[in-house]
Image 1 (cartoon, one colour):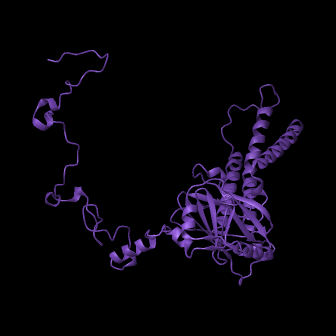
Image 2 (cartoon, rainbow, N blue to C red):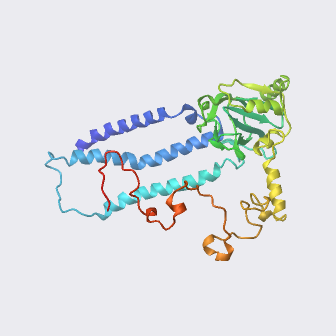
Image 3 (cartoon, rainbow, N blue to C red):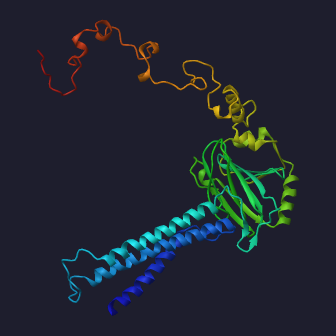
Length: 389
């Protein structure tokens, strides 16, 4: 036992140094959050890592101890070639990982519901309750190629690659994308949320500490992905109001034509501010009809619903298509496969196969044996020629 104590001390030091090295490799923003949601996520990382180390570290230490204690030169070690089972050892080996898995499962289940991005916050911070009368600040996020557009609908302003938030106030983000799938990620604020074309994601978060931080896209989306970053600034309520007033005084407008120009791919775009935004711009971006004359997805779905007889359950894509060969079956009818049809139900259709070359035996002589004889094909270069009788 005495000879193993120095080994345990050295191994514990090595494990501590290894843990510090692993943590040093993590992003500093993840481990130094400025918002309550990011803080809870960091604590979840710590708890999960600690639970897993409860089994990993002892196993690594025991491997070295067993190798040293039962080495070939140690004559004092017990030698039992007939050992095959130990109930107490089996209980230890299986119960410890099982308990850790149960703890991890409970932690994952609870955190999945508590940190659901669609779920409004129930507190501002660990020591500050949420005012039930206070409305969250709404920010509409649009992932462009390759920049971020932030619309403040209540303030009537917009920014590009600059997100300013008041501290200790709940923020609701409505997130979408114009073309490519991206991931909205501000490590000091909250976790990653996907931005997808034609869809709306939601994230509730809060900043508890003023300062300058950074956000970016965590999903590769093309050539300008590396520079698709934005500045995140946390300010107090008074500074936020002054910033809104200064943005409104800039005089620059984000009309539909300006948005369509901004939507075109561009890289390393500097921060921009807009004093006004075209009405309903975010909703038109979500519905894929920002360009004038483009039908919105909601209008298309309404047309399909009306074609389905007004029944909401009958709404389906293509329900309003005209009848024809490529149209879906009428409402209420279930398509029948060819294997279940009778011969009189299968009307012959046009032959869409590639026509044969003139003179081919299959076209001129269907009964010819050459249709099954491949000897007329030219031999491969270098292959021996075999005479056929």
